[in-house]
Figure 1 (cartoon, rainbow, N blue to C red):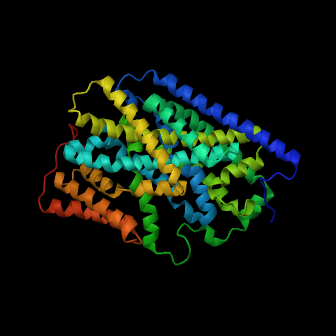
Figure 2: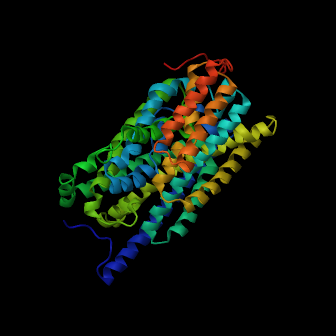
Figure 3: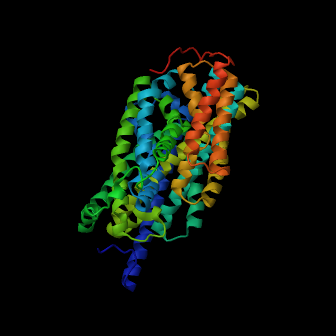
Length: 487
């Protein structure tokens, strides 16, 4: 079967290729600057910590849906999942789009309403209200690395897109990507994020649609789909894969991300519980439908571009090969959209948890709103630099995202569910769940190389909470003035 080539076959084509790359680079940079300008313009309305962290709780259906979708549909959904499916078949997409799509739907079905009714500023507030300030601080210190890892994945993906479109080295584009996202996020907060997410979401849908149409119009693509081996179409992986391995692969994105700080922030920023619920359900549905584009391209990729040294560059390479310069620039802008709309959310989540739940507490809580806003912005810059360092040393986008979903999330999941459902327990039970879940994950993933470390960490967290609750260590405390349970 014939395949595409991104290599120029003559000096004239080489010159034209360089011109296209230069034009695309300028287009992408112009798009980034336009996004920065939008964020800065809307960011002028930010006057308080509440404006900065939860958009003044004003998001309606349109902004709510698009900001949830755009935040979650990031680098791993385009760059990472297509590359993983290219290498492993459909089993490489268990986490994304299928697992993370289910995660967003689960948020809408189960968690959105009770979380909104608590009137939280960050997810960390729930741990203080339901358990104690000490539990709050421990939980926040466990959640922050997750957001920083997530941001690092987006920075690395941004660098990959710039490397393909510009011809610059990944080291150069990584530094440029980090600088852009740090400045972009620091300026506007969640309200600016929501509006730019709307623009970026539309750009993403357009860009992916254009690429899908160009690829599927090729006879080679149809032949590749018809000739797919059955093994590449199995979500369970190769024959003989253990059911526990399959369950582990699904548990990490679903349990590990459904209560992520980034997703919770958007839910509690909606203007009503009905808006929060329906926006999450709509965003999850759109996520699964749009996610089928990188899935399809990843499946046919080996037949169209065989032997890629970097599978994560599949989508940019296909676009560079098939699309004329204006449409390639549009697609590159779409990928930048996906990345920016996710990285700003991750950095904002890390910064908000650190400033609101740690720094302000350490300063005695007597901090005026203007200073709270400055602390939040400074924290975003701090964690942006940390994400840059992680992205520099990471092996790949998909690995960073899976690590972000799994790290310490088992204990967070168990404690938040117990807190919302008012399961009997107090500070000791929460400490036990957070400690046992994190210890089991670290031991299983890094020391003892267990085959299913995340499932074991979930069991350890649930067991730690349950054993101490049955032993009578603490009773359920009030969560603000709300007496709602999960329905």
